[in-house]
Image 1 (cartoon, rainbow, N blue to C red):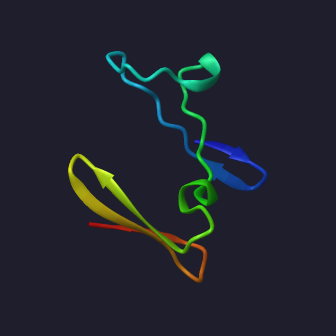
Image 2: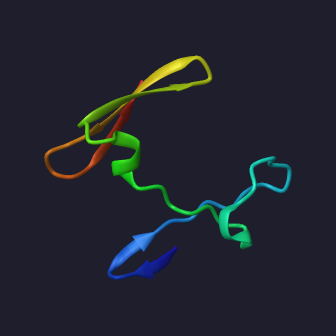
Length: 67
């Protein structure tokens, strides 16, 4: 975990067998902004492997992912 501007940034390392190339070429995935996922909404449905999940932003600024 790396400290940046007082916030802990988590990066996910790719497995060697992954077919998804990392951004930046350093083996780490770049963080995706929650605003990008939510697109101005408070909640968003996400389909993953045929299942629906709901991503919600709370009034306290937290994210909740439920099945």
